[in-house]
Amino acid sequence: MDQKKMGKFIAKLRKERNLTQKQVAEKLAISEKTVSKWECGNGLPEVVYMEPLCEILGITINELLAGEYLPVTELLHKLDLSRLELMKQLEYEQLRFRIYRLYGVEIDSVEMSNNGAGSLVYFVTANKQKYVVKYASDNEINHPELEPELCEYLCKRGIPASHFVKNIQGNTLSIDENGRRFHIQDFIEGVVYSYNEAPDFLLEKAPELLAKIHEVLKDFKELPEGIGENFFRYRRPENMIKSFQSSLEIAVRNGDNENADEIRDIIDILNHFPNYTFDVSAFTYGNTHGDYMISQLICADDSIKGIIDWTTACRHPLIWEVVRSYIFMAPECGNGRLNIDHFEHYLKIYMHKGKLNTYDIENAGRLFFYFLAVCDFYGQYYQSLTKNRSIYLKQAKLCKSMLVWFDKHIDELNARLKKIADDGLVKQSVL
Figure 1 (cartoon, helix red, strand yellow):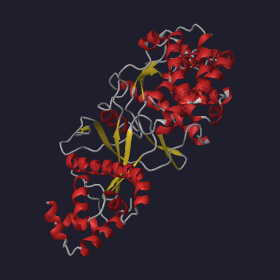
Figure 2 (spheres, helix red, strand yellow):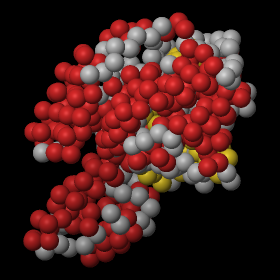
Figure 3 (cartoon, one colour):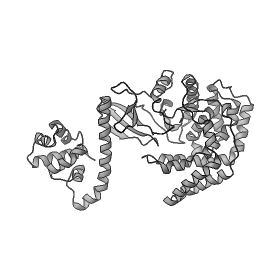
Figure 4 (cartoon, helix red, strand yellow):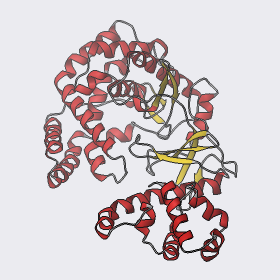
């Protein structure tokens, strides 16, 4: 939608009807300044004013949106596109109004982020400053009410976490007119790499930062439980077959043949999955980021400038987060394989400052193999209604390919991890 073009069209039609801006404003019960703003291309008419404005100017809403007269055939062709654009602009205008009402800030521009699967994220600018407006998914694993306090704690201890903006009531968590919770954060300039595209410097810096985060979070209040006793109690491989079969039915019904074949492979693995049991109390268990991966790291000048998205911060076995961060970072994992030598190097960087015990190291492979088997990411993709749900599918395909690798190479990986533990490279956990 071209605001300048629309504005010129409004001005042209107004003048053809010998109307002043003041007269149009009076008919709509708005200010003359608002009409001037429209005609200068500095804003869009609110949706509630579009129909009466079109009646005054003698045009259709689609012609208003197009900024020109439309032949009937072209009008029909553009109808659906115009509606989609209208909805997007309405969404942006509502966000502008919401931020002004709650923060007293006038937004200059809005764009939607393509990153993040569950959260709804906008990038906005105001007074030449850039901010992030984030609506976290409303579910049991997200805790947006904890994020500002946690990030303030981390920043004071040298972790480059997010800085949050307070609303006019002095709160960092806001609630919109629909009861949805959201934050506004300072925008951190830098580069975010895609899954499995980590450059060499990041594969060196990421485990070092993760170890520092785990150490710093030891002294923060206890976060909600993540992968713990309940996870292993209710997520059993034999119980997950039903979930994957349901996802398979949806894939077949939708004609997603590739997804269907991949889900069948997962079910085959579940049918012969090892009978693993874990002693949660034996793991080095503590506060974590909860979702530490390549898409949460903002980089510049071969360093990490920011670590974002602490909404899912919780308590996990720390080794789980170490393995998971590598899986989503390492280029070879994007091709469905894990280079054990490279992973060992990554793990040793973490252990230089991080504290893990023998049980952590010896069970690192088994734990993540188990995690891959009992999480139905395809089901998450099919059940999601978010705009960026394709990210769930990307995660599902990566996790499926790694599940196949672990199924074939788990004994080899376990032997290497046992050697690392036996060689005395593990520091005893003090968590």
